[in-house]
Length: 279
Ligand SMILES: [Zn+2]
Image (tube, rainbow, N blue to C red; front, side, top):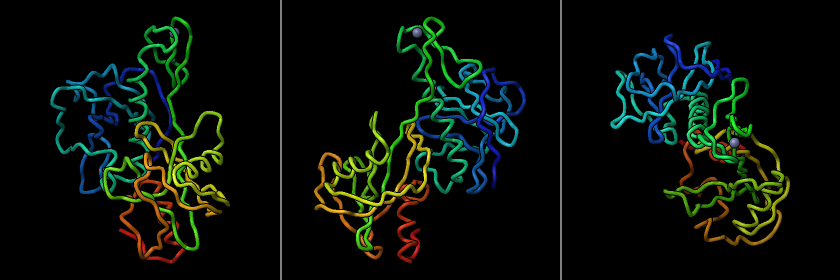
């Protein structure tokens, strides 16, 4: 299924015409269900009587139909026939990567709007600006743009092995490549070298851009790289990492599921080694 999504916004209250509604509640999105091909909800505004429509955000156009995002703040959660709540973080397999990106945009903008109700400079209530995707303070003119937090993620190779680590904050036994947030005033390359040094104590070389992925938990942009080991002994920082090691494809520990860019980096390594693809 291919969608034609246009990044656009408008300030208006949703009209009566059918629109795509991206309704979120506790990290889940309400989606129409047709087997595994989950689609966005195409409904009329009046079919959402319990929701606070004035808080809806216009997030773009999908196949020339307006898209709105909104939190479901009702006590029990709304029910719409033939729909189900799907976790945005764990929903892979339920919707395409393309749809994940559009849902992610909706989620990021909703969280941003909910956290920017008042001016950070003078405390007055903020209002959406008519000609730009941002809030502006009517009192002091301060502008608040949507927040995007860049983070690097890097796959490091040494003699045909990949560095995989289990993060202290991981909720499962999964091992992944290293990642970290970019500091103010830091280039991406400096960030990669610093994170790798801090987390596992080694030096790297041949840093190459791989690809990027918006990661809406809540507002990251993951920028992925490959690199090669250049020196030093693996020394883990126990506040960040529980375990780390160099792994050949045949000895791999459990790895992240499809969708995450970490998995794309790991799959890229496996392909280069001509190793069988993982489920
Ligand atoms: Zn202000």
